[in-house]
Image 1 (cartoon, rainbow, N blue to C red):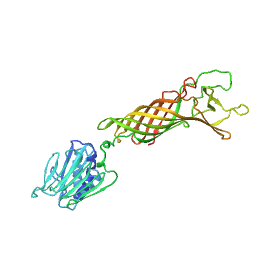
Image 2 (image 1 turned 90 degrees about the vertical axis):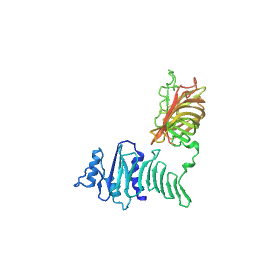
Image 3 (image 1 turned 30 degrees about the horizontal axis):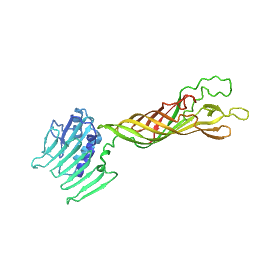
Length: 413
């Protein structure tokens, strides 16, 4: 029985996981004479050549690896009969290796081989009622079942079951032994039955880049330095980074067999880092926010190697999303929004000549509350993608340039 189980596992892996198709090729081989039973036989050809001929007539190819399996079944040292089934492309191939004088009933959905003078003894290979397992019967006392729920072997009153949870052994005296590896899926809470769907929950780390959209005020002033220049909003692309640490949960609104519509929510801490590509620093002068250079004692502009404005927020995200299977190419699509409250903001500059560092904290007339739109896409074998766009300007209206922030990047976990 163990040898039969190994043969079935080798031959039927593709059948269990492949697409089904009514086209099939059923063959029986005389184990003693090593010939195909039925049809016209060419005595000058070997069994392999005969099999190749039959395969070719069906548009199939008898590969060397499949022939080795067939030959191994024929050479098995057992008085019983063996069988194997494979799926090549969309065609099923079933081969029975039987002793001389056996008869074959078919073609039917159930593949049977019966033997003269053996009473009711038979091997019966068929699909179970759900089509999710292959069942092998032998003389009513032994059974091998291979399917999605694992491998089940029965020998009289003794049974062995192997699945994703572990191994379960039942002795003839009724004693049972279990060896469980990992989490026992048979004890999963009812609310967790759909864990194969994408879950937007837990701690998430977002890393990306940010930018500014909008135009600087057009002012022509005959004094130096000017409070605004058209280039003041220009950023260093790779230096302007967005970081967010989110603690997320989700509630299911509607659920189907292969997808669910959920509402994501939580709390996050966001940091905008605007790395400017010039030497003019964000400055609060009086009641307004301008851009001003740092001047030395002679009135010359000091060149800066770093000129950054950082703003931190505490944010409440709301993310309605469609969750799909974790095996899908697209696992989740979400579109929602967020509301944030400014926690802190500061500028940081480093002089290019002597590396002097200066950090200045202020509200810089930055909008205390911001809100915006958020989109996320989760892809298989690739980090999740996100895009944020603020609907409120970075600075309060009338107190600074009307610039709008946005960010995009990936979610690491």
